[in-house]
Image (cartoon, rainbow over the protein chains, first blue to last red):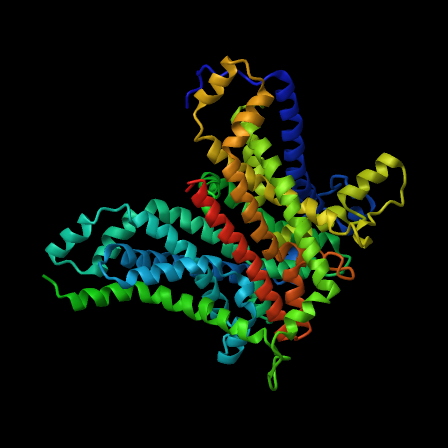
Length: 282
Length: 293
């Protein structure tokens, strides 16, 4: 960046206000999280009596108990399963569809592209009731597939659109030369298109992971068995309960938040780019 | 040359897996939802066709109006709170008004990764009688009995939720504005400085108008986001107490899945979709008008 430009610094009054606002925002963001973190290391009595104080004798016993009582081990496993299967499937389904829709000369691609674009307007609320009835009818309710399929379907329209705009930029000559060499289209896809898509695939994977990991409604409505709950649903049901085991509630919330903070710091620049572009917000 | 038929088969084999999942799970149910909204049905037994009754009923349903009011308040807090604040924060960071601007940016953007239902639970703890806020008020005022009663207020119960939404989403708009600020060449601000423009003038008269299209599109996104908002409010209050914090999506959920009124629930969901589609159409039109991609 051009650090040494002719730009003059903002006047002192602006800089002072900037400090006030930034610090206020940073404290509001961080302090509740930090407070939750250290409070989760306190026994119940201490939490009730001295809500703001640091733990006298920090202990992880709340974690062990919350982990067991809340069934968080199963929930964590489910979350991984739902997220991984849905995210990876969406990626390859979307890349394949986008490849077909950009590099083949058939008229019907206009129709298919338009149909996917229409999907950007369909929201969860539009389908949740009939989809639930449909899943009940065909026996998908209370199965993992019954969660994963809607995850994939809802992620497809935006993913196909992103993939199309990227694959369009790959020269058509690649396909033509492959045709001359007699390569199969399947090989062209896996050996040429997929590797070339790595940059956009990374962004797609990260944003899709985030959406699936934090998803609530589908799991909440389509599953009633504890064994099928994901982390956000299990934690909400455990921490939201009107019980007075505050230490356990706090510990379960930290278990939900901490992995995402780690995720955030690893992928910060991709997240910033993905969300900053704006189009991916929905 | 390869024959056209096998090429077409390959083409379809790339598209159809995605297309069939998409149509089966998203397109087909939408049609069914519309049909359901004209019926009275408890989820089992015979379905009774009632025409527009469900839609007519909405107009005399006080809970529907509370939901609508709260959805509108949520839009307002986005448009007049999150978006201007996000713009101000982005400008301050872009102009490097604080040391370590990058660090502040990273910290403030953090809530984006935390699930809404968990954000809701976190803030419920902060507001609870043994949470941060009442504890601070108690030690500042000396009133050792203080607890927050705003949640029982018919008019103001939604305010803490609006605050949490501000906490959760302001940084998203900040990041969107930052990305767009970086496309504005420094020379524009330099030139204004040479002309003797004050920082306030530069911000309000030069930068803000340049980002107006972004702000406008953000506003429309905020509208559709508001009508979709379910997770945070469901987890924080469930729409209660006595529907004070009801929003349309939560009301739709309760009507359908708790009270088994599938017809009325479907009608509510159709109305939600209409609001969202209208907002998205507006976004599209605006995007074209501002020639902004």
